[in-house]
Length: 149
Image (tube, rainbow, N blue to C red; front, top):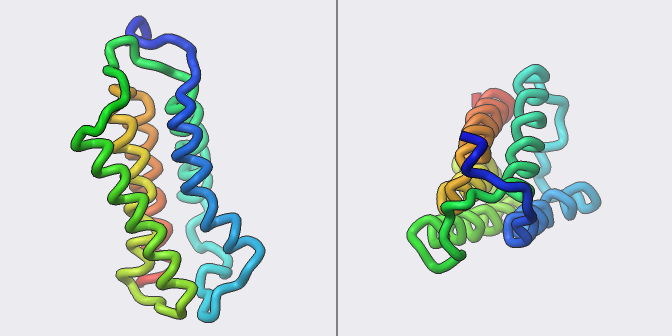
């Protein structure tokens, strides 16, 4: 399986990650009006697994290139990536407008994870798809258990 990959650098994968981190960085410095996200997590083991899978996902997305992937072009997976990206930003805008409900929590949880998975599928990066799916599951459990249940 690793024969299909080469070490390289996917600049757009890094750009996607950097753009996705903008709301989180802003949140680190600017508190939202009804900021329920600033609580201690009750899922520490899930959080550790999520952090590890997120790190491996981003590293593999940016550093492992599938030799069989096509040049980047507008495809259904790239469109899905952009839609997820926009949904995520909309969720943060609503969160900063004081809207906090299960739908917003799910929006801050699922679309960013799916954006990475869709991008990885487009790039035929199965390692990033697998670790991104693990991150999605952990991120969803974290969001639901800590903020919805």
